[in-house]
Length: 461
Image 1: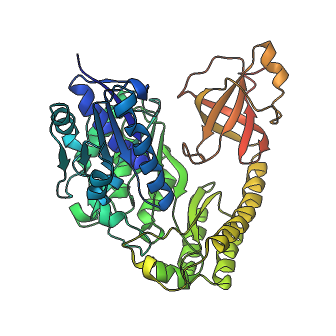
Image 2: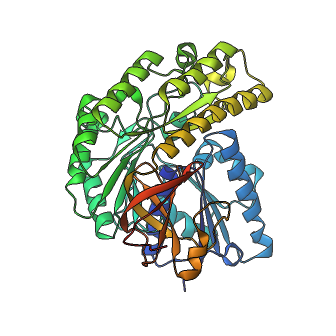
Image 3: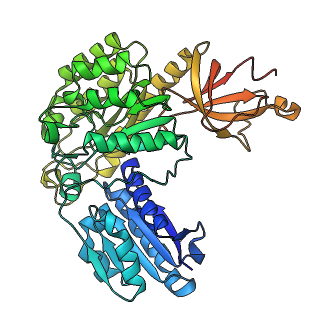
């Protein structure tokens, strides 16, 4: 009988795809999986170390689970992912409970690592950063109605604050025929929303085909039966072409949603960050996007407290938020990462100042987001059902009394909401709905970042 494996996936959705690939490799060899970490014979932790907080989360997870070597059934503790790539020797030397380290491009060797550790071997696995590992029989861990498609690995941008190119290597696109095969399998498995991810999706194809091929890939994906929504994440503004804008505009399956990390609103800081754009180009691009794609939802991220950021720079960051009025916006305080150029820059900002600036930016974005959400009241939107709410926050006015008469509350998402990072629309329905169902709703109210809606054909409250 095969040993039980407990799998922990930390970090971003790109890391989640890697975890799903490794799960599939082990499942195909007959291994079983368990949610009970104490009962696991083998634990695999797929780690992240993009910023300090992610690094600490990964280390804490390793230390916590390592205790089962003494108190549980644990025979093998294997660490994979970015932390294992960056701190391979430190992990093996300082946490002796770790039995094997698997580098980011050795995912296909996870089976070998598991079996050799169980046989008493002690190994590290690293390979040259070449191909992206895919598996057409992927175990989708997101519920089955949506899934991620990783179209490339690595990054060539070398922003001064970012460690990813050192960990993941240069940009490497997955050949289009492999992606289309993978996508067909996902659609056949019931996936209705396909989400394209990479460190940067907009450069897809440059290394393989000599030119950007994201627009071509999107058109091919739109031809696959089964997908209702196709969503784009991680699009760098300077790489967005007119051809890509036209595809997003013209293809009905593509969500009118763009995740576009900008990072700052001051030209001086953008230059210090190594970003390949400036404020005017960003504003001009957003103006074009909103003109060409009516109703487009724009998501971005900003960094505050970058080395050398003056009060004037901070105010420019804030004024960009006020000028653009992003639909979705996240702010990160600068994280000083060793072995990056920014870590050595003069003018490091105190944590207190970072936090104060973060609060001011988020307060301004909160006002804008609440205003945008309120402006959607009365609109008709298509939503994807995520699941039924077992318990509900009484502070949200959903006429909860109707639940006693057989009306259920469902968590849903609109095209404006990427899973795990954006808001939800809460829907009342007397009809039983399933995860992955698509429903037309009328937005009846907003509650902070979330919406409330109903469909007269589903709810008679």
